[in-house]
Image (cartoon, rainbow, N blue to C red; front, side, top):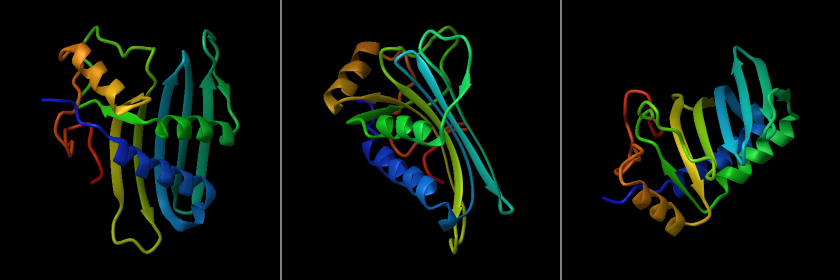
Length: 167
């Protein structure tokens, strides 16, 4: 069975994170933690609004650097936006098996997001790990090359104990 593609979900997530960055007043609450590993570097976006108080932290580590450093909010959002704008994404269905790591040649991003828009009846939640590619063919070639080494999502929607699409 071929690996499932997530371009639709990542496009929606991209729009949602842009809206959160540009018009946070539309949201009653949110709790976002996004970690992007790309080109040997790391970008982390953590932001939360609860009971009207916003707490945010944006940091990263350049390639081959040992020290983390604070990033401007715009730089963190821009890096994540570029990743979510790639042509295709695969999702992990579960945690990596012991001793297995993700290929650093392909950007990957862990997203945990819960939010509630003003006037919405309930909150929405997502917890996913994505691997980004330029095109769907590249993503499927990668999945076939791995031969089951990574626990890639094959059927959507994903609903596992730790990882899940929107609930």
